[in-house]
Length: 337
Ligand SMILES: CC(C)(COP(=O)(O)OP(=O)(O)OC[C@H]1O[C@@H](n2cnc3c(N)ncnc32)[C@H](O)[C@@H]1OP(=O)(O)O)[C@@H](O)C(=O)NCCC(=O)NCCS
Image (cartoon, rainbow, N blue to C red; front, side, top):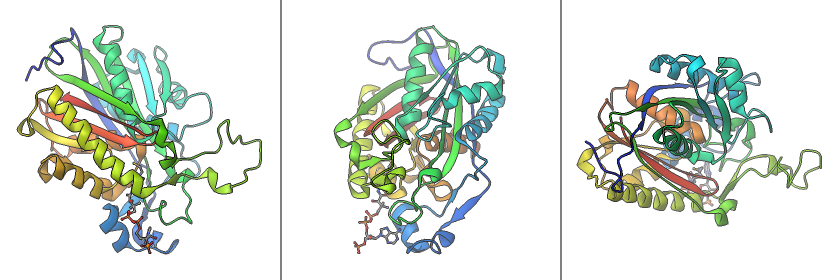
């Protein structure tokens, strides 16, 4: 395929040359969660598709997970760390308030040439990051980038709230993008959206400048993620369907031309319901939430890595990455792999 996107074929394209993921060894199964809060494996499985999640220990941080995933992606791409030009870490559970998580990844990898930053767009963070890096590579300004999604959401989970603690897990995924001038393969199109009016649907309010760590919190629960599950559920389906339809129209793609939809893994029912509305058959929709839960910005690159390694996508296939999350934010990338 060699689609003209918006009547424009860039001189260069951002091609995926490496991919990798990493999850902490410790897991928490639904049966174990059911001993902590009033829930059951049956309730969680039928409502979300989640069976277990990976959990970091006190010694495992977001930068650690990010670096482990990055090492695998760099090995796959056969890219020397000294040649990396950009490192972006998409995360809402950063290593520290500052410096960025990406600074720690750069230091541990020894990627001295790179300029680095974090991106906070919650579950849409990785898709946003690909879209930003795509611009730098297509313009010819930079030749490669390491894009990582890394989260330790279980560190901001309220383990006494059964409506949210069943959902989240920890992990990281990474992708190496490199400049190519064959014009055919790579990120073909990205679309990004936000709606700040609905910020309350999903949030974690402490410890930013509104509720600083230096002042006692009137509501101690503000240190945890808070979600309005029903609102998110409805918005997620609506925005995923809208975004994927827009991408297909914009790129003149048909369902037959799509090999795989790789969605942010927030709830298997949300993904299945959106796919049904898009007339995408189950074999064209990758779901791996059962083992990981929702890992926010890490979920798309973890799913991408697994999807390739399980042989479900191969070079030349058309893939849609789509995500929805806090902000609210949503977006998608169309990729010829
Ligand atoms: C959270 C979510 C799984 C809840 O599923 P749901 O089908 O909407 O369930 P409801 O919230 O309507 O709750 C149904 C009942 O189950 C109960 N319930 C909630 N959590 C439960 C749990 N873990 N175990 C057992 N019962 C539970 C509720 O109290 C409610 O009981 P009631 O009818 O007696 O009031 C679903 O809304 C969801 O996945 N939302 C999006 C998640 C999200 O925000 N992800 C992050 C952003 S990408």
